[in-house]
Amino acid sequence: MKDRKNILWKLFISTLYLSAFTFGGGYVIVTLMKKKFVDAYHWIEEDEMLDLVAIAQSSPGAIAVNGAIVVGYKLAGIPGAIVAILGTILPPFIILSMVSMFYNAFRSNWFISQMLEGMQAGVGAVITSVTVDMGIPIVKEKDVMSLIIMTAAFAASCIFGVNVIYIVLVCGAIGAIRTFLYKRSVAK
Image 1 (cartoon, rainbow, N blue to C red):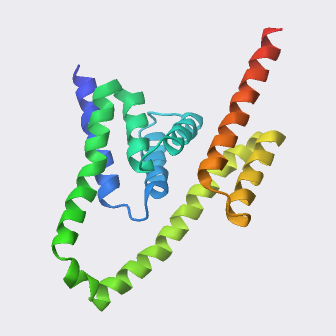
Image 2 (image 1 turned 30 degrees about the horizontal axis):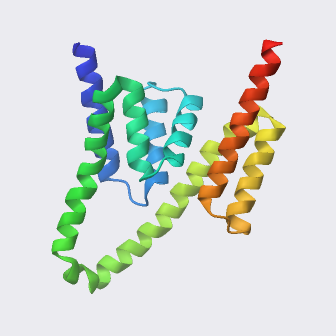
């Protein structure tokens, strides 16, 4: 019981910290969640984290909250999901409440606008890091079909401007078909 409380506490503090000091949206926080829960705490395997991210991304809502829900649920069931949600939503809720109270002062402040532009550049670097970190294991697998899917999804989004929803749905369908065919071939 004490171990479960310890996990819940660490989960809350970790998601609170990650959410409070992460700028740039859900993809950035997912990378930091991977570093915390996979690399630092070893609570989740890297492949499993990729699966959890896929679930979070394909679910409606903010990816940061969805990611916290699936990680929290994986670690401690419903209480873990609740604790992770609270840890994830409290910092932005408090920060955005404060910003909205002083919006007019922030809007015209040159220093704040320059700081936010600098943060945008940093966010771009972090998102690139996420892409590389998540893509390297797929490349290392040397699974030709996975490489084709990854390349086609990238091209569809970045070159042809296809809506991400369609890409996720098509990739999910391809993954389901591949799993079905694999299980069917193993059963024979």
